[in-house]
Length: 239
Image (tube, rainbow, N blue to C red; front, side, top):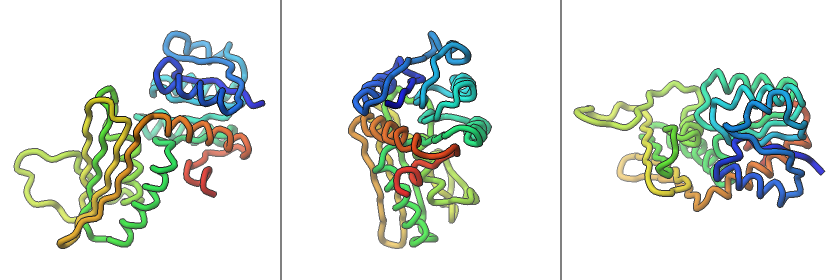
C-alpha cells in the first residue's frame, strides 16, 4: 500500500485530500500546516508521495522533505513565482514531480480545446474570464494563466488585466484577463473568441472542489508508476 502525507492539511482542500487518499487505499502518515510545517524538514516520516495544496511560503519545506525522503510530489499550490516553479522542475531531476494549477480532467480538456480553437480562429479577439469564491487570494487564477498559455504558447501577445477609463479601441492581438470574486464559487472559467458577427465561448464550471481532489489523488497514483521527472498533468493522465 502506498503511503502519503498532506501539506496544507488544515484547510478544506487538505481535509478533502486526506479523505480521498484514504478512500483510494493510501496510508496517511501525517498532515502538515502552518502550526507544524517545520517538522517536514527533519522529523516527518518518509512517505511515497507528498500532496501539497498549501501556500507558496510552504514550498521550501516541501522541497526539503522531498529531497530528504525521495518522496514524489503532487503540487496544486497556486501563486508560485517563476523561480519557485523552476525549483519544482529542478526537483524532477531526482524525484517524481507534478505541478498543476487545476487537477480537473474537464479543465484539461478545456485547455486542449482552447489551443485548438485559438489556432483555428487565429486573428479573432480573445478574452479570458475566471470566477472564484471570495476567499481566493491570487488573481488571475492559475487555470486562467494556463488558458492564456494555450492561446499564446510563446507569450508574445499583449495581456490586459481588466480595463478602466478611456482605454481606446481594442489593440489587435491583445488578450483580456478578468477576475471575478464572490460567494462560494468553486471555479468557473470562460474563454471567449470574438470574430466578425460571431462568438465562440468555451466554458468550464466546477460545482465543488472535489473534482480537483479526485484528479490530484488519481495523478498521485499514476505518478508513482513513473520514473523521476517533472510531469505535465495532461500528459500524465492522457498519454
